[in-house]
Length: 73
Image (tube, rainbow, N blue to C red):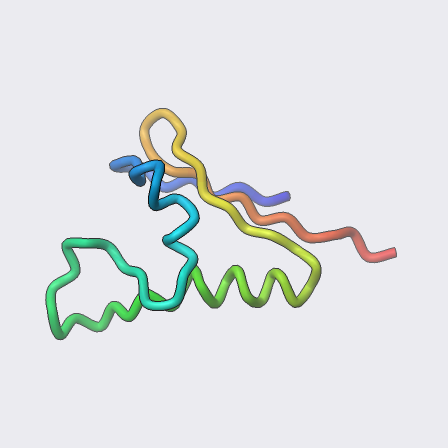
């Protein structure tokens, strides 16, 4: 398990799963911006192919992303 903390605003609870969908990006991204909403989708896809998971959860002061991979046996 690896945890990565991001300081800042919390993600609305109803969006915590949706942020991993293809094409979802922050609401304030300017039109024509380089942001495509692919990063978290790609992360979840690759981790799933390796038998792992990724999730986001709000914590005091920000958001924590937790990546889990199975131990090689």
